[in-house]
Length: 219
Image 1 (cartoon, rainbow, N blue to C red):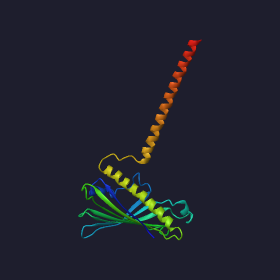
Image 2: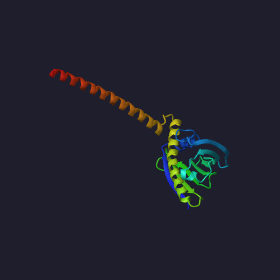
Image 3: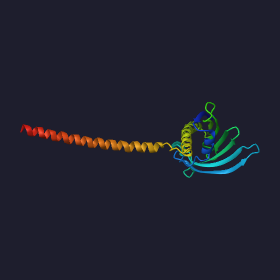
Image 4: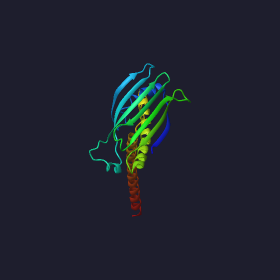
């Protein structure tokens, strides 16, 4: 049994801009789990299509229940192969990715098609498919559920990747990361709490002084 995912996303940037951003996505604040990327093959076909193969290394923390099934010395890094076909004439880019290690635990295969959005020629549409499978006897369903949930989470990060890089390429200030936003909110909350404390002390001091003055009047 294989878990299947089908989704569609839209980037409000032209296909040319998304194509340029695709090759400059790493490093960025949303993909700290991507450790390395290497182009191992590239060629231009007679019909002017660009074919590429990249090898990516990513960290991949297993769930605790899965760690018990593997020796402690098993590498947590995952090696990903990515094949891509770019057709500049028709403005399409198709990518295929799959992991080449930890295949006994789980295999995640993904196919993405980047094309011009049919409703707005200045936007880019991403059609995404994924297949999650596992050959572990007895726990394959649990592994597949976990893999599918993680894949969906990574799709959100991928879109953040693109938005961040596209903003940089277009000369805009990239939107703040969730961590930065949370840190600023925390600092602001501290400042507000401190100001409230000082104000409360001031009010308490004034109240005490007023009470003391009232008591002196009755003496």
